Length: 151
Ligand code: DQA
Image 1 (cartoon, rainbow, N blue to C red):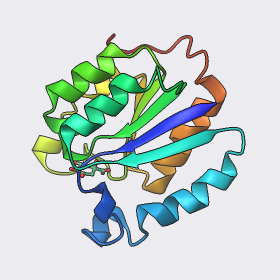
Image 2: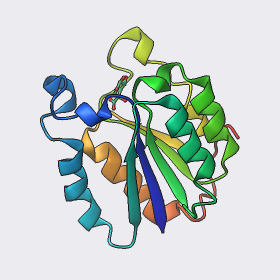
Image 3: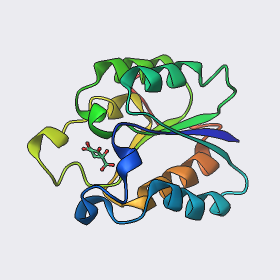
Image 4: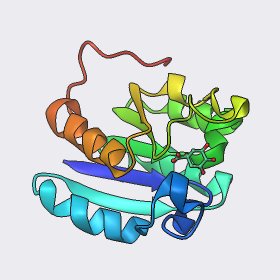
């Protein structure tokens, strides 16, 4: 199963930015630890600081034969209706993840305008958020029956 793993703005700084919140491991290091745990998944990782680039990748995911999308939109989760619409456009299984607990921080982070377009959201578990998302894709990705999105 081919999974598109997308990270949004500033997640390329993971390991160097606000270590008390996001940890000290780079995302590449996190991925190196995660990928071997899922030999049945082909995980393609992309990161962009540009909203439009993320949107284009989501739009093209089906024609690129991806079977699921895991997205950490970064701060775009809190305001990007365009990213939310792009997620609504695809019927692929989709999960939103966050390293930090967006409900336990500043008020503006409590809202995710993108999460409702996804089948679910995992937030606050650090790199475990990604591992659990991959686990869900492995179990339910191809047939996410009983799970709902806004689309
Ligand atoms: C984040 C949470 C967002 O609020 C923040 O803007 C990020 C990272 C997370 O993974 O915890 O860039 O998405």
